[in-house]
Image (cartoon, rainbow over all chains, first blue to last red; front, side, top):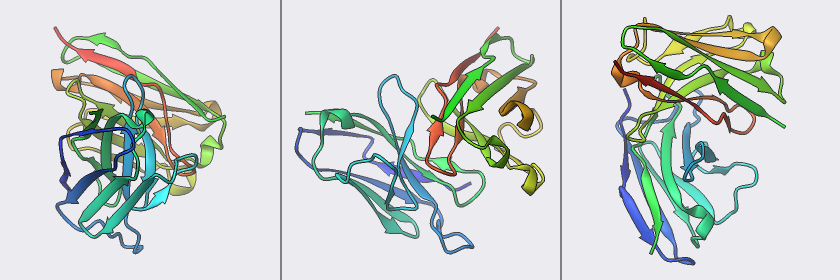
Length: 112
Length: 117
């Protein structure tokens, strides 16, 4: 199985400051179609997970452009340009290239 | 509005069975590829199973941890997807979500399954 390694485990950020989360996969996530199926999800307290970004860098509908995704092959990053209170929760990366699909262990974003 | 509603969870003894149902609305279910994902008490997310559409011969895929014990199925006439869970183990204890992500990303509210004697 593809192992998804997320860092850091937790992140304490002040409102208005930037944040960055890394996700590394144990093998390339480039699929046979040439597409890279790397997603980022946010799970707010008490809620179901919700996808923010798919195909490495494409924002889902309604997701503010404060969020951005980048990376290739095995190394990916989620950035928040200016953290807002609504951004708090646990962020997960998810690879959908290889079966079984696998998630990172999560990064908890807290307010400083 | 897309909706996914899971039911059927509960407390069950090890070795017993349980069947989860995910009732959907708001999209063309017959074309949808559906997934079950679970979240352990430690908050780790694990993809469990996928079922594709009729045009893909209802192909199914499973995580190794549930292969041979769990069966995903669907009823397009009811816009519902199911997860039959047999020979349950304590490590199957989790919140189970059904998800659809071909046009946007949608998750149900989840249903709790507790396997304990």
